Image 1 (cartoon, rainbow, N blue to C red):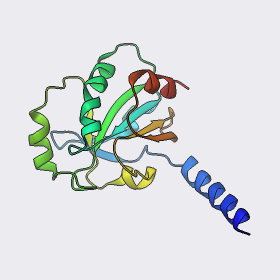
Image 2: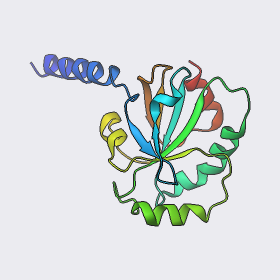
Image 3: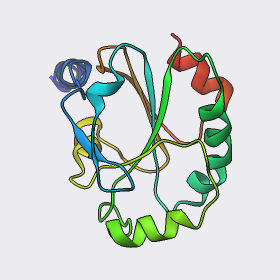
Image 4: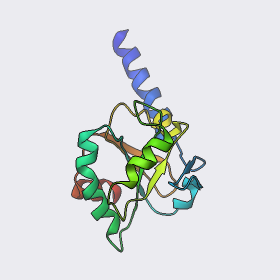
Amino acid sequence: MKKLLSILLMTFSFHAFATTNLAEISLKDLNHQPVSLAKYKGKPVYVKMWASWCPICLAGLAEIDDLSAEKNQNFEVITVVSPSHKGEKSTADFIEWYKGLDYKNITLLLDEKGEIIDRVRVRGYPFNVFLDPELNVKKTLPGHLNPEKIRQFAEQ
């Protein structure tokens, strides 16, 4: 009975997760302007979820900045922070803190409602989300990924 229940739970979890679409989620940029994820429709998207208090996240930002600067990629690169969720600073404090960093190429969006955290079940940081061109969640992975792994998963 336990084995059957485990199989059913895994099947249900996969089905619920496999149909997760993020197209209608609206986030904000650092100027408090709304940004719909639908604007990224048409190409695969790599989303790096991170937090200001996470040393592994911070150590990987230079790689994300370099990856974001690459031309002719077959996928989009965005980063998302969720102010006031999971121990993150408030929106105002985060923006003030982030402006002190020197990343020129990173697309950073703010998920103030924590919608992505809830939808993709972020369990810790850093957390990686790969979306297909229709913005359906294709794969999620916790932990740091180097640019080669990001390219590999994003282009699958």
